[in-house]
Length: 84
Image 1 (cartoon, rainbow, N blue to C red):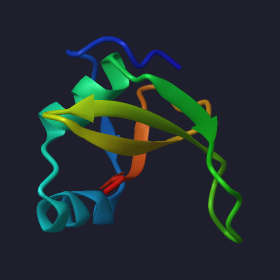
Image 2 (image 1 turned 90 degrees about the horizontal axis):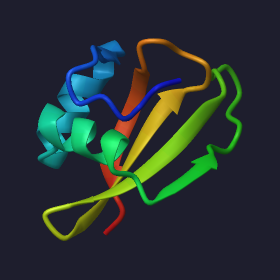
Image 3 (image 1 turned 180 degrees about the vertical axis):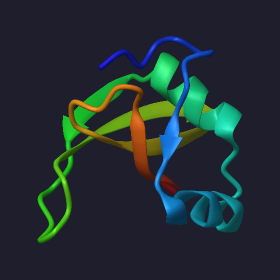
């Protein structure tokens, strides 16, 4: 999975845009976090959910967690959330 290309297409699962709006997360901030992450770790397993990797990057002084379906190309964003 290539996460570093700021112009690469992203696939957002249906509920992600709603969650982004609720949480004040822009597509630019997701792209930034994927291109400039400082932490990467596997997401915990959830029944019925596909395996994911969490990328954590700092955007405007806040840590943003971006959950990406493992092995997806282009990156399929499962959700995103601020750590604070």
